[in-house]
Figure 1 (cartoon, rainbow, N blue to C red):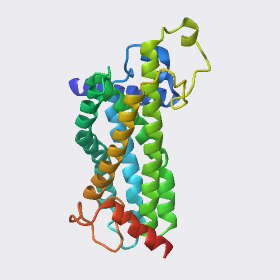
Figure 2 (cartoon, rainbow, N blue to C red):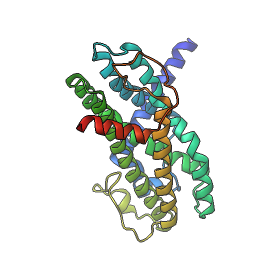
Figure 3 (cartoon, rainbow, N blue to C red):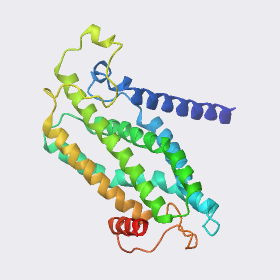
Figure 4 (tube, rainbow, N blue to C red):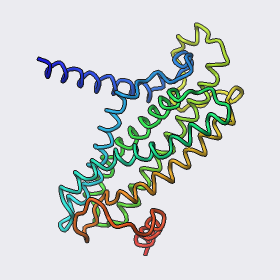
Length: 267
């Protein structure tokens, strides 16, 4: 009986997590009335279930290339990628979150650690939602090409696109948090059927420019750390010319590898 109830609680967490993510993407949880308490009204715990699930889904799409390659690492690469993509995001977050909170506090932001973590959880949800939505495209090209460098560049482009959209969401939500603290929310605004979407810009008059600058710098730092973290955790796609391995020896760096992939594609 206890096992059944635990399963139901797990199912409820998944369902609520997906519902929260859907409301984030639609902009419902980042409208001014929803932010009146000074934080994004999401539960990071249940949103984590969804983030991990979507990361695993994209990881499976990344590993499709090796699965379809005659000489590729095969199914084990798919499994490895499904494990590594969630690790990539959360290890990067663990490495960079302390610096964000300290810089945020030094700049005089009123965001508490809990508020920052909720905001980052929502932004991470947007990031992996975009990522997972492009997974079928990655799987399609995996079935259409035998070029490993091309697949590397395609995945880099997909991660970059998802990251830029998540950055837009984060900055716009910061702006709205600043406005929500400054303005008195009118009753007709709460009932506005034409409220903007999640990354649609509002007026810049009340934005905390210094705090947003800190978050911009941090997002660049998050991207750089994430890129190198991906290099440390490689392989994700699976080079058909090499046997399967959970990790490769430390050598070179992410950016040099991208340059090599570019030269291989256009040579």
